[in-house]
Image (tube, rainbow, N blue to C red; front, top):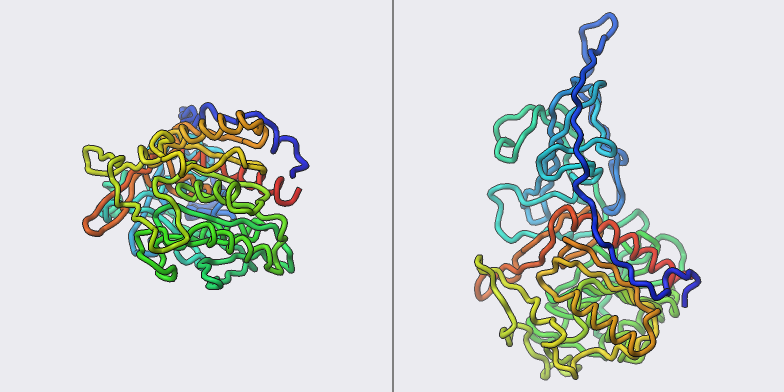
Length: 463
């Protein structure tokens, strides 16, 4: 199945700690700068390279021609597709040459501290006064996120940002999920609702089926990024989409639907039909494991991010047999702010045994990713049961497990901001759900996990 030994060995990879807050050092000494023959000082210059990049690519940010040993604030802001303002800021001190380089220098305050080259991206949060419960998610992947990055004079706080602080320099960068040449194709065929992304070139390509959670709808941005990295990817809707018959608050599809989606990919002329994997987050984990173990198809690999091994409600190919996820709330819990957590719903002991996947049937490599601060799913408990079940079946060698302290439920592509909580529904009343995750360790988890995901796909779909 794989030519690289490290993808199939039995070792469980656990990231014990991620040291985010690096030691912050202060510049204590000074050196005067002499300019020859002129009192004219060049204006401060902000350079960012590249200015147009994929969302998972690092950029270099450098300020020059600033006063030596001066306090400055680096600020980033963007307006979401819904019109909400997101922003972040961090404090730096220039060096003796009037320079600051985020790849090298440390932030001494603001939204993050330490040497964080991409901190201005992953630390973005809704601006003061914006709506509660916001989560930054790209809807139109054929357009970028335009992010303005600027240098402000002095160490500025969010509260000061509207008080006419002097902007010394500014640059707008574009962050894309879709690389040039990637093709986006809407799929409404044989009852399948999804979007297929194909990499540039004639193909054929290895492929992924991309499944999200119970937020519903059709989420495309991870699939677009996979195609940008050379893998065809089918973003597949299964819940809460108007093109799927039945009530929007029910899962109205079953094994037959997912079997048809795999068949569609296998028969596509641009896809290597025997090199298809499945990736799922949250409830998409259960579906991914079910596809791999119970519906008569044989994916080459499975990638699971913070999800359960079963469902509280049984899946049915018959629309009349489907039940609402919100029908039984006995395992819902609420914090003091009234925010809901679904964590107990996914505890293995709370899942009916007949609704759990048959893990002993797994025949392909499995990458399971755990955020240890997940407040939406009992990811650690589910990972433990997967590990125990595969061990009992003599299949421990199939599992690679990654575990991230301080990371929450929504482990997504890197350098994107985490929402610890966000709006779940507005009807019949507004309800905010808890996801978990602290900004810095969550960002580190996303960066590391995405690298491992791409390596896992490369190993098992191309090897």
